[in-house]
Image (cartoon, rainbow, N blue to C red; front, side):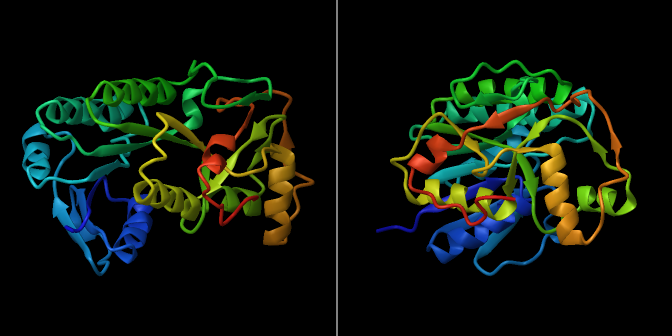
Length: 271
């Protein structure tokens, strides 16, 4: 039996964490990014230079015949155009190329719960309407729709707020006292659980729903989340600025029932 082969299109933190799991599971792993020399060496992972915005380079990559592609893109900058260039354009190229393959590989596309525009603390699941209220959310949703138009078996993984090693901006704001408490419901997922769930889906292809919400078991009011983090940091949130206005990320409670129904067990079920 030949060794299963996965391509990570975009090779940042989540891809690197997942790549290690796939190597351990016996897969052949290739990571594609613009600057391979800037990435850490991981035994068993071949890192190659390729620009997801360049269809010729993508075509050369796909000629190597993969069983699965994991797409973890980033914006070129945080403007509307940056998200368009970082997500929508690569997905158009990839969709076009997948139509040319006799046996297109499975695609796992890593997106964000920013595609939901809910602001009143509603419960949200995979069937809830997507009405993004930000430029980034609109471009992420457009990219999802583009890749879902390919002939591949596509699963969209909409991830909530990611925390974990190297993602310490909020911790710094809490230490500095610059964070602002809003009345919003918030949702989080540890980076190790995103990687773990991607690997679990690759190893268990029968779980192939078109969309999964990737989030932990416990939505929290922002004040409760900040208090929990502040306690671990041994700082106080008593003097943080408070507002009665929900911020641009909205307010919603995300359900992970479909993710849990696959049998995946969260390493970090709560913040």
